[in-house]
Image (cartoon, rainbow, N blue to C red; front, side, top):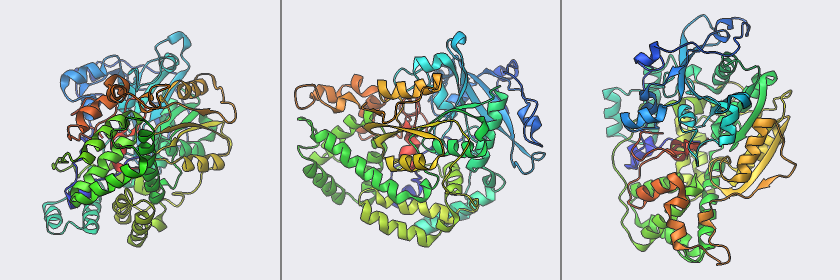
Length: 581
C-alpha cells in the first residue's frame, strides 16, 4: 500500500516522489506494431450481464508491446531498456464502460499485457494479477515476470499465462490527472498549510478529472476484472493479488462468488484499511524495531551492539535534523522496511548517519497531478471517517502509538476528508463472500504496510479462507523463499491446500549471520549478491544518500511509482512511500 508524500514535499520541503503518469493512448502503442496486431482469443463468451454482452463478447487484439509502455509503467528508463523489457510480451486494450449503470455511454480502454505460459502442454489458463497501491500500474508485474529473484517462479510460468492490467484511472488506463490552476498554485505558495493543500488538490481534481473520479472505485475495477476473465476465455478467475490487490480480490469474491477459481491474496488488507492508518503506523514502528533487533542479534551490526542503544541513537539523530530532513529520513527508512533484501543496506546507511555522516535529501518537487492513489483509496474509507475532526483525532492517536511513523497519518487522512467524491455505502464493511471455493491468504508475520492482524481479521470474516504465515519481516510473502513459493505455486497450479497450521520460515539469509558464529560476516551483509538486485540498488542509492524512489527490480533512475510490491515491482516503491497496499 502506498502513501502520498506530495503534501510533505510541498509543506516541509521533503523528498521528491514523482511518477511519470501518462495520458491515455489509443491502442497497444501508437506504432505500426499495434496496427499489425493479429486477433487472438480463447473461447469467446456470448453472454454476460444484461446490457454488458458487447463487452463480455469482445475480442482482444494481442500484439507486440510498444516500448513506450515499459517507460510509462516504470520498468525502463530509456528506449534501449524499453525495447529489451517488452521483448516476448504481448499487449492489448480492453474496452469497458465508464459507468456500469449506463453501459451504453462512455467507455474506457484498459491497458493489458501478458507473458504466455512457457510450456503450452502444461498450460492451465490465465492468471490475472494486481500489484496493489492502489494506483499501481499492473504492467510491471508481468514485464518483470521472468526475473529469477523478483519475478514468478519458472514452475508457475510454465502453467499460466501471466496477465497484468492497469486499472481504470491508473497508468495507461486513463490516469487520474489533477492540474491546479495558476491561482491555486499561488495560493499554495502563500499558504502551504496541509488543510489548504488538500483543498486545492480536491478542487483541481473536481475541475480536471471530475468526469472520471466517481467511477474509479474498487467495485468498478472488480467488474472490469470479470470482463477481462471472460474475454480471456476463462470460466473461473485464477488470481494473485498483492496488498491493495487483496482488497480487490475480496470485492471480486463478494460480487462474483461463482466465478472465483484459485485465488491467492498476498499481504492482506482489511476492507477498512485506509480508515485504519494508526494501526498501520504502529506496524511500521514495530517493523523498524524488529529490523533493529534482527541487526543487533548479529555480532557485526553496523548500527550498534544493542537494540536500546540503536533506538536511542536514531531518535537523537532525528532531533538533530531540521524537520524537513527528519521527515525525509523517516520516509527513506519507511521505504526500505518494505523488503528484507533492502535491510542490510539500510543498516549500513543508518550506521553511517549515527556515526555523523551528513544527510542531504534531494529537493526537487514531485508530480502533484497524479492522484490515482487518492482517487481510489478515498472511496474505500467509510464516509463517517472522512472528516477533518477524524484526521485530527487520528493524528493525536498516532503520535502516542507510533512516535516515529505516526506523523504521516494526518496528511493521508486529510486528503480523503476533502476528496470531492463520496464513498459508497458499503465502504470499509467486512466481506464474507459466501459461496466461493477456498481462498488462500498469505502474510509475513512482521509486515510493515499490511499488519498480520489484518490478515487474521480477513481470515475470520471470509466465509472460506485459509491463512499461511511466514516468520519474517517485510511486505509480500511470495518469493521470500522455497516454502513461500511452494505454498503459492501448489495452490495455484494444482489447488493443493496447505496443511492446517502451515508456517514458513523464509528470511533474507544476509540478515541471519553465518551458521555457528553467533553473528554474520561483514562481507555477507554488504555483498550485493546476497542483497539481490533490489538490495544492490539500495546499497548504491541509499549509502550515497541519493534517494531514488525505486521500483523493485527496476534500474535506478527509471520512473516509478512500489509497493508496493509483488514479483517484479518491488514491494512497492510507490507503496513504500504512499503507504497502505
